[in-house]
Image (cartoon, rainbow, N blue to C red):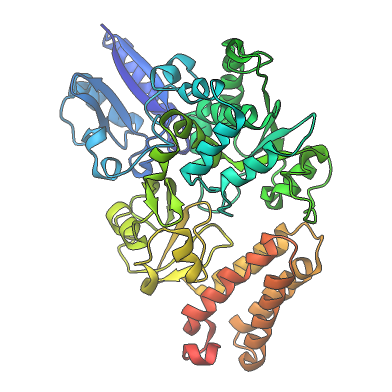
Length: 517
């Protein structure tokens, strides 16, 4: 009888040598005459343990990591295929505190199944949500999503049910569903992990969305930098077509939904939904004026759902277990779970899925283990390159959209980038302005010109030139960007810039916060 051994094919694990580790395991097993079934799964999200190897035993999966190719022979000598003890042994995967203390709903299958095996997906509750959907009216499906309290996980946090209801009630012969998979925020990787580790859950979520609102065509707008996600999505889509989960007559229901992947060319601004649609239509990625909203006039002028990967991947469990089940997780108006991504100067980087509510401090220390350098954590940027820099005094803020908004911060896509006390926050503010200048689509003057003038002014501030003039000028530029930009790229660049200035004035050559104002 062969032993099942799991090695991640997630690109994060591959970058750390998982491919070589897997091939060495196969070679050693053959050399020793041992029967193994080597399965390439998604990552469990504990990146400091990658490449992580799991062995299926009677007690459950036992993890070993990080396993380098030169460690493999020693693992076999220690009889790891029966769960033998070894210095790299982490015990039962499910019992590792980092993993055990999570609440995995959207990521329930990631790291457990073979990502491109439809049989694996079905054996782990896959397509139960779609089966329920086919027995419901569109309005009933939309009500479940509305009742769940699901909000956009891409950053804007707009209620998903309201968006779907608008598309449902807008008459049109053709409607579309678009998945925004242009994950461009620094320190974020949850979209990629879903697409690489459980592509069927995204496909099922998009199919449910299409059937609910009467859309027959879907597009996954994927960033070109994700080749492994691209391959897994296409493989899963092909399997779904062959098995009748996509196409003109889904499971004999008479309902139709078609799906394909389109690659973006790497423009950050195409993560903005209207710019994304321009790109899909074959045009330059420029932000559109609103109204009309995409839900009324979107792709090719038709009613269009545009949701983030995690938003759509959260839909199957809502339709499987009901909106109330999902709503019971979280706090306030932030319902369900959010996959948080720990990156930067952190001891235990990786993905943590939790219900809304724990504090930033709990995430940083109970899961992240503090800084990788062992030095004090000085600042944390939450929500991507346009998110505010939060000082230690704000670490007790609960992960909640409204709680963060009160501090002029954003939860965004759930990316958390950590900096220790060696960081220069004036340099980070300059980086934010320069990022905006480079990535601006150029359509509106505040973003196009203001960001360029912004990093020029910051250059002067960093040199210590005429602070009494340049700091007020920087604040004035931020006010123009905030209130005059066409989209969130320019409109949110002041968040990191002003938060750095307000909380860390000493890095700007200012003696106290009163003078920084």
